[in-house]
Image 1 (cartoon, one colour):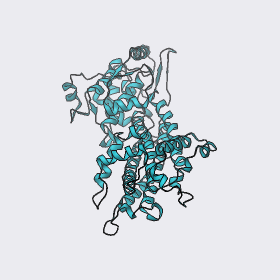
Image 2: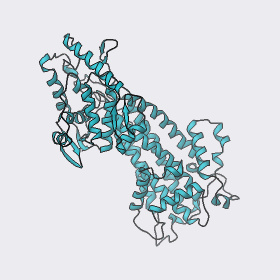
Image 3: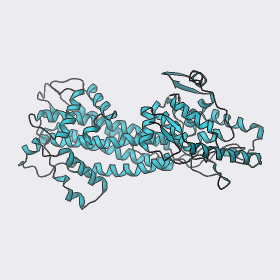
Image 4: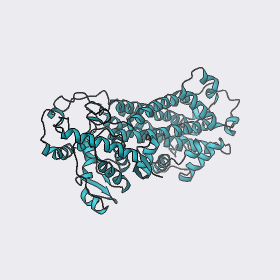
Length: 502
């Protein structure tokens, strides 16, 4: 199926499918009509001699400089060229695809004044898998993600660089190979293409989808760990959650009961044990995981609104016959949301590392030290916990909020910025880090279950255990664990466990 722009609001899952799985995109008839209406109104205003920011004036502090009618088109190309100042490694392909999709979607609302051909060119890039080279650094996230979007937009005109058919090349060569023609920018089109939040928002969408999945995997890892060290399920009793009715807490407790039911052979084996209460990393799973889920629910709302927003400037309102300058390009909402996502997701790893530590400790787990029967000669999973601890500490630095670190730019004209691009970039790194820690917990928990054989955990967790064992063998003697962690991390990233943990 094809994602059709302009018919209904884009949800995050559709963005993910286009970005990651290469789903095709098209423009609806309604979108084309809206785009054309705004374009024609802008042309009429230009012909009337009206002075409009970014159309026949300079940009930023140069907005008082009037541009002659004969130079309006040159102004737009100069804007793209001068703003393509990004540095650093190229953004990964799936992020670039998300950027292209979100930029096209924003233009489909018909408030930007671009030509239909310009939006169709973006769609053609997606469908032909032509991916502009977008350096990761250079945006302060306030007048939009100017530098990254300039790199995204230049190739539409045949300038700049792209990745096409597995090679990095000049954009005009890729266009020729794909039998596409470069577009010529009209009035305001350069500004409309780069004045927006699509860099940070593209990264935000993909971070959120991954984070949402990690929340499910974290619950499953926690459940398997709890059974492996013979913890209690009493803390997940619905009555406890009802008297503190946070939605995330209630949901996670319900999931833990589902993951660990019916009563497992392992849980029945320690029914009469003398342990009164488990440590917080086991007993407070609903409270900790649930709090993060509540934040993720809030963040989703922010991102979905941003995905379906018009964020360039000035904005065109053909129906009201107005062109109005404003500040929708400011990324404050996305930046704050990404800072919150970083914190929420990091907590999954923070508490996961504590559960890994409990499995290493025989006084707590009742299992062999470091989950190996050959302790002394064998070090077992000793260093797995150390590696997890290092990543958790790395996240503590990455979770420092980006949004509070405003810095003035453009001769103090743009005197408050969001740093949303950095907030989104580091949020994605936090997600990767958390995925690695959860992979470590799954590896250790699977070993813990093996050490309790012939006793079994719940049917659902037995299926998860089997999927882990398809990629990673049980530990019998010391070996390199990095390949094992990488395999489980890859399974999480590809949603391989989703069918058995939901």
